Image 1 (spheres, rainbow, N blue to C red):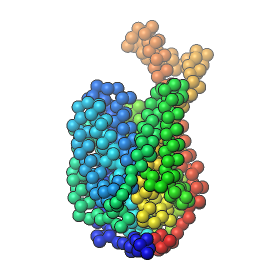
Image 2 (cartoon, one colour):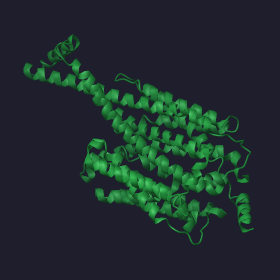
Image 3 (cartoon, rainbow, N blue to C red):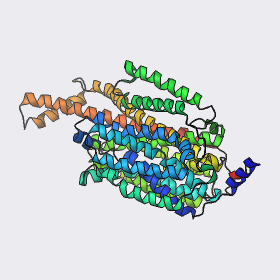
Image 4 (spheres, one colour):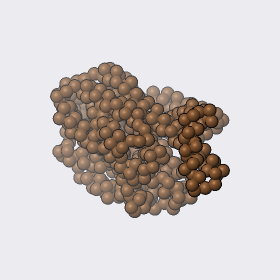
Amino acid sequence: MTNSAETTEQEVWQPKHNPWLIALPTIFAAFMFVLDETIANVALPHMAGTFSVSREESTWILTSYLVASGIAITAVDWFSKLVGRKNFFIFSVILFTVSSVLCGLSNSIEMIILARILQGFGGGGLLPVSQAVLLESFKPKERGRAMAVFGLVVVVAPIIGPVLGGWITDNYAWPWIFFINLPFGILTVTLAKMLLEDPPYARKQDNVKMDFKGFFLLTVWLTTLQIILDKGNNADWFNAPWICRLSIICVLTGFLFFVSQRRKDSLVDLSIFKDVNFTVGTFIQVIIQAVLLASVAILPQFLQSVMGYTAFLSGLTIMPRGVGALTSMVLFGILSTKIDNRLLAVVGLALIGTAGLEFGFLNLQISSMNIVIPNFIFGLGMGFAMMPLVSLSVATLSNAQMTNASGLQSLLKNIGGAIGTSLVSTMISRFSQMHQFMMVGNLSPLNPVFTAKFEATKAALCAYMHSSVADYAAQYSLYGELLKQSTLWGFMESFRICGLASIVVIPLVLLIKNFPKEESVEKK
């Protein structure tokens, strides 16, 4: 009788406030977390200069945040039961905000890494809790519009990040990219105290046990995985003995973690993967997240290193993605109740793939429109793909499963983004080397095209220097052009693979079951 009464209470529970008011603190929290995943990217050279470290060492400022947030994500459900979800959400926002200020005040690389770890721990719980609160506050037939608004934040924030970070860094100083979280954090805490409430299944519970073994295995697994992904390419991957040893530890702890989570009262509930919609929908979202973060990482690099753009202008070129995402969010809010959401997801994936392939055919004589149009299409596809997939992946889950489901999705998407960024960095390096090897044979006196170009360049340089120096300078100039062309090919091949990855997963959408909008999963 008690279990039946609790189930009935969960089914009839409704929030006291308007769902759109409840959405405000969740949207602000999600915006802060996702924005900080990319806002520091363009400021890394400035941070490296401030702390007198190399660019390679400064990347720990990014990876420490991802690792810490990934670890915190899986503990969201446990912390919510321990102190109540509302209290945990408010604590997470406070920790995130305070650590953001500490990041801006840092005067050493060690201090900012520690502050970023604290920021990651605080931010790890923001996205899954925000998504769970938003989904359960709206009725099933209204979740499409709610997810459109939430998706606007999740998709647009990492796109705005490099632009905002570049502008703040160029016009003020890099610490301000962290200080801007302070007003958002104060506003979010205030609204959360006023508007959020805990449903019966998310309130503080007694006798909650912590899975310390699972938490330890998770920490070691994600930490070693991130080190391998971050340093593997520079260490020549498995040719380095320490990478091999670390990989063994990573695989072993990852395997033991998933085995340990099959027990009762584990850190995460893996039984949720028995749901086909959740499993397939989550997998596709992981691929999309990998493509998104990979493209956001390499497009500014391409524009700065190959095309000569400034940091701010390279970040600005990603803005059309935000416009495309905003357009798709508006259209999705209108179409989600009229068209099969699986069809919208297919259209979105096809648009992402099209944009990736368009980027794969750029050259060194492009105009700005060659960047703007594919970016707009990419953003349009992100909105159409992510929003229906988020809704469909949880369509067969009860409200009580939302927090755990959102946490697992966020964790896996976090890992997918890290892997995508690492792989695309490796692909650029390897493809560039491959094309350099293929083209270097053309720099030969037996090639009449090279000879003509060399003599013309040497003749032009002789007007400013001795002929012997001009001979060397002409060879150096032409070899520089070859390196530039091979690097261009490396970027283009990587863009094409990103596009193809989005297209390849389209058939998986057919495995997802669609349900009428008025059907309530709580009645299962």
